[in-house]
Length: 533
Image (cartoon, rainbow, N blue to C red; front, top):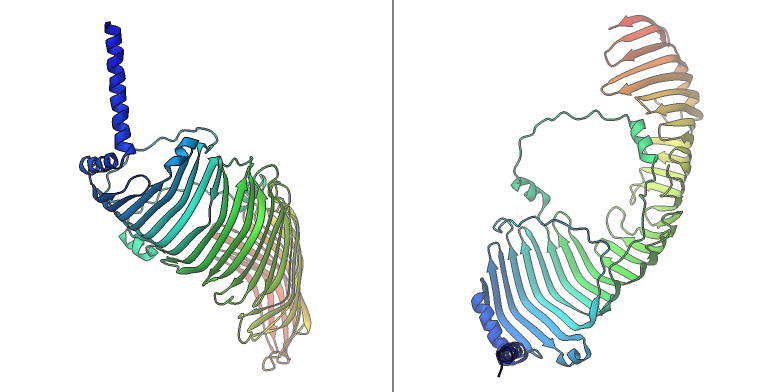
């Protein structure tokens, strides 16, 4: 026999022995037990109490694993594999079950991990070359504690079917979930207080310039088609007794979720939530490409004070990158309707909105201290050029009945009150004003009183007043200045004649200039003129 043949025969024998050894260790129950015993012996921190069965019915009892800062205990792990599927180039797992799981993680005791550089690998695609079927995945009595956060699960069961990039989650059940978060006050006490160093801050831009920069670009950034790594179908996800504790305590009694996503087409068949805060039901669809069309409907009932019993109907439609339409209907303690459409991808944020309510009152239950009837608010245009209109009729325990109407126009730098009218006390009060914040915050306004009569509402202090007040001023940083070029009020208070006329101006440095100010009440009068400061 030649040397070459001897070498080839030796290599072949080694390969056969190697494959035979691997086949014995993996493919037989005895070999599999030897593998776990070796792992128990050679893997640091791993301890396996008992191993029974083979691939078709493998059970591990009392498994423990400990490392600095990490301790894991599993009462039982069960695995059942359908080996026959391997002949069809697929992986079938009948059962994966874990019970009595306890995990404790103390990040302070864990060794620091080396930073991992993220690599841009392009769009992520998840797919499997061979079909994978997990008929049942079950968890029972799972408890995880990471520092001061604890998570426990009483029962969880699911299954999945994965073929190429299509992943189907079979009916899933989650029962008895508890997430206990640490309270913010406790976390704050444990944090180390660093010495405060006052670093010089860059000078802030004027509000007008900030608003101009904000609305010079679309509120919604440029959006590309979203590429999801796989198609997902959640047939039914049901939850019972799900609780979150901490600074806020929320309990979800029942939850149902049915959702699917195929090639960017997302469909919400059902989302039903019944919690101590209220109930919510939602359904709809969305497309994560082109102009992002959406169609979502939500209905809910609140169970929190002071809005207990409030019913909410929400409808979102249109296209996110074109015109998005929103409709809200409220009934219960607050009854109102809202209709709006916005173009989020356009500079200036074009927006049309209308809010209507027959009656708004405070408090929401019991005796009403304040009430507004026939409330109507309309906004049209965009933030760089809009029109605003508001009207209502108000009354209250310490408020005389009044009708209010407002018409205004504005942009990102200023708002012009064409007219604010308040019809009350048998008369009328009108305000015309301009508020500008392009550089400093400045204003200019004119207030007119016409036939104000308090005798009916305040009989102990009857008065009739007419007049006009013009004012202008500015506020910048911590300083201000104001002038009243015209002040004229006439009438009477308790049958005493009132006459106020004049002008004045002043600033935050207590510098006042009064060209002339006449004050008269009945037989008493005073004339003021001069400068101060």
